[in-house]
Image 1 (tube, rainbow, N blue to C red):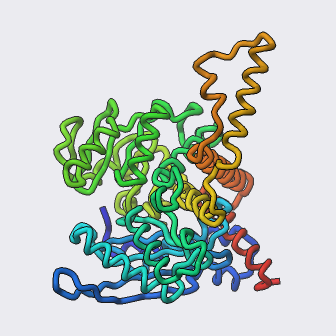
Image 2 (image 1 turned 30 degrees about the vertical axis):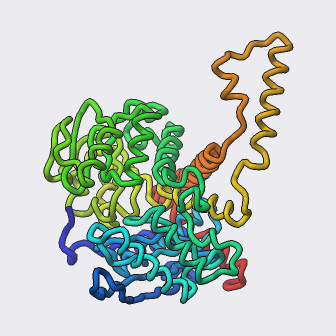
Image 3 (image 1 turned 30 degrees about the horizontal axis):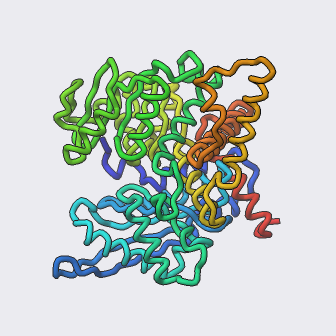
Length: 476
């Protein structure tokens, strides 16, 4: 699935080349372009933790790519593959992502070199709390400075441990709950955060299909996802919710699901929930799933014919070694960096359309922004207006009925109820993804020197970051 390091550039090099390509379409001073591209600072930490009577040493990083807006924002991943290069690349993508969707954060990212599967819950708590302490001491965690979130290998549990540790060390911070996002709802989180990245992917694909010119560009027809053949690579949090929503709400046909231990394929469509439950019950893999055809080498199915290919796991799965064999009409990047710079060049020459990660997986940080606002305001979304809107809607229904109109009984309850927090979150996310894509496609179709959605998206992001620095007085 990968090629030798001497033939494929690093993740960070790939991101920077995508930046350079977009920069050539803009009238921005060279010095400012270089400043925006480079990571501002990286903190590396080593710390010991006593586990089962033995001391183990761990290494982690927290990078801040840009602080043109504060706080800086980005997840923390726990992985045995994480390194400083990856953390810097992901921090850069966070800057561009936040700017693109108008979320007022700078870009940051963290990583801890660890295999979470090798440790019991008690040990993971000790390790997480110690890593959090190291970051807190250097002001790499704080509601107005740097706000982590879940990423690969972390989730609500780890965020709860981090906010608890932060509270213990910063007891005077009344906004302590806003020091991280992605928390359980019971601990200051927000409804819809767990599904946010996956649902954002779906909202982005839906918006793509609302534009006939763009659908035609991808050699497809129709104005909806219904009936489209979809291959999902990775059934983690992002891949699961993306596939589940596409399957159950949009009528897409999920023909293949790829995981670390193999892949399952069914031309007639797979039941996503069934596959996911099998994975949960069988050690996190899908090998042995009784339906469909099983492939030991999941990478083979990246090259299977389909309408939409959705890489939703790790970076670099589509590279120069396999890009020429991709048969998808549209690639929707649900993961960070799944297509390398060289692979995208090949895909572009083949006419394969890509909806880029810098836009498409921005759902997580968008809803994190909503959670952060909720924590700072100390009030849940909808508390002030839900019942008022419900009463107004019911008065409207009553007025229609008393004037001789009829409202179907099955619609009365739906029309009459006011928006709950989950409704507001999904509405805000949908609006964010729609507006952002409309800006991307407008730049793409109106600019002769912009050759892809990615270049259009990156150019918009760079412009916004540059303008923020100008307002700060860094460049006249």
